[in-house]
Image (cartoon, rainbow over all chains, first blue to last red; front, side, top):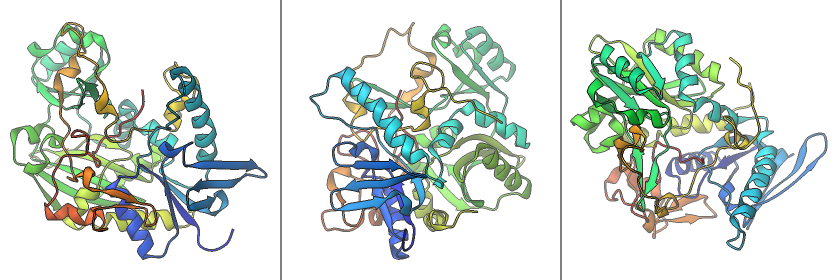
Amino acid sequence: MGGEPTVLILTQPFDVSADYVVAELQSRAAPVFRCDPGDFPRSLVLAAELGDTWTGGLRLPGRSLRLGDIGCAWYRRPTRFEFAEALSPEERRWATHEARLGVGGVLAGLPRWLNHPSDIARAEFKPVQLRAARATGLSVPPTLITNDPEAARVFVSKHDTAVYKPLSGRGVAENGHYKLIFANRLKADEVTVSVAATAHLFQKWVDKDHEIRLTVVDRTLFAVRIDAGSAAGRIDWRTDYASLRYSVVDVPCDIHDRVLRLLDMLMLRFAALDFVVTPDGEWMFLELNPNGQWAWLQDATGLPIAAAIADALTRGAA
Amino acid sequence: MTFDMITHDDVLFRAADQFPLGQRPGVVAASDSQPSDPAARPFGLRFAGSPASAIPVDLSALRYDEERQISVDETGAPAFDKHSTGKTNTRTSDGHQSMDSDTDYTED
């Protein structure tokens, strides 16, 4: 291994947030190798041989990377493997599994990540992060996960008004359109038997003065206050970006310490956390995204988040 | 806190969860799946809506620059330079999925 370590970025080609960081790294003359598992096996080639560790490398047309030269890997938004159309669905399923265990297995053994994909996967479980948040002392709204319609009605009735939230960021593709599932306020009489169809998450509705998107990069916190200018945006700001106003705020000391403890528990170096701030000024944790977006907040506020990520990707192991 | 890993495809925690991969823009929108009967459809799906984009970018006007490893427009300018100008719109090349959504589109 010679020269400065290379930053490996795993993401799709059209990922603006990654572009910010690539540009930042290149401005520092830090070597970068960006690729997408979605290009495997058609144009992305892996050849890894086991010695004391995995040696060999990754190759794209016109570019290559030795595994031993990788300093830190960034798991951004990689996409799924794509195989030749000629493969049958069953052949494709088998090939996908082989690719995941082969490519994913070799890469998962890299020593330094922002964040390790397994840690991202674990932290995506909302019940895991809510429990961990509570364990750190963060305030979390009363929460119910159930497929029992009666339990849901009782819970919502007890809190007068509740919010239904999906457990994941996954949407549905129907009629050729992709739709996301948004948080929605509801009363007990709106709960139906169709809650029985799968797991549903309900939370007590918390009166909010404003919301906070807190981006954490290697123990540096970037807090942005979000004020929504529409009724829909006040329930779920993801529904109406155009109505949002942003301002940089300080993080209370107790929240700062608990957030860092939460990331330690979840083994994350990066996360985007959402809080509600009540009219009384209390910060209530809503959720954490271990791979959340941040570039639009840098645009809106000037916070140097891309630079912080570049720092994290080029910093030596602790 | 511990979290045991089980590596089978059809159990609660799968190998796929250890190396989660999403879909490229446009892929999911191609589904022609139809909503089920309202009585059978999960309650949460009544709150489905079109995703909004945090950073509006017109994917159809961009290409990936293999040398610079970033996406650029037809003049070669980085795509991210256009974000704060308001000159781009929220449509992607497929008309649906944003390239910079806050949501991961992971596999089943």
